Image 1 (cartoon, one colour):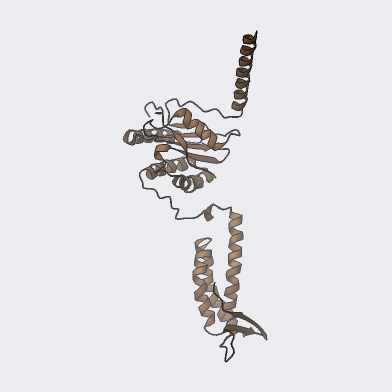
Image 2 (cartoon, helix red, strand yellow):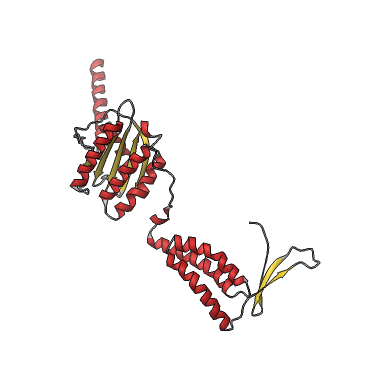
Length: 309
């Protein structure tokens, strides 16, 4: 009797565990079969010639290096987590050799606007997280925003191979500024322009050489913050408009600010500077300031990077 009860309990536990596993699998996106292909475009965003080119290119690359690179493009993650799904894909496909763990997966979810480069443990030292992050931001995201998936994927594969060969720098010569929303960019431009315009106004209404000292001092700031970051016509306008405005101010007889240096003349206080205009004054003290393709059993440990566009 006791043996029968114990057996029943084991069956119930197994059944309960099976139900739990079934519920856990619900909501997880299915991983497609490898089917001997390196490029899986389930979203159909790549041209047929691009897929053929990539298949041949990646096959030749594997023959010459033994590194395995595969591409999976899905329409959506269906609510799954990008990193979790990516790991499930590489675990099933077993990219890279068991000896070298030299596999790489490029995963793209079109509707979710997400992408990830999953790197095998054997390549993490050369294809670093920083490399992957830069490839996603600089090579893929700009092309994807323009709707050119072919160019983005081709650029990514080229850069991944270059990084593995030590020919792709993880140091980004550009910055994230270009990736900002255009509205945010112009708000920032306006704030910087206002700040620079205040100092330019001080220069325009200054008496003597001070106007040209400030003109020269502000020139590199306009070049970097307005010309380089936003538009060079703003910098050009500053170079031309400032002298013209100064000439107009002088000819129109506008009141100019007189800058005077106060030397302390016997007082114990530190020196400072002051200017006056129209009877008002302001002072400031100085201070310091193609053949059948199959995985080889490679392992992955979560190396790589994720991004969006």
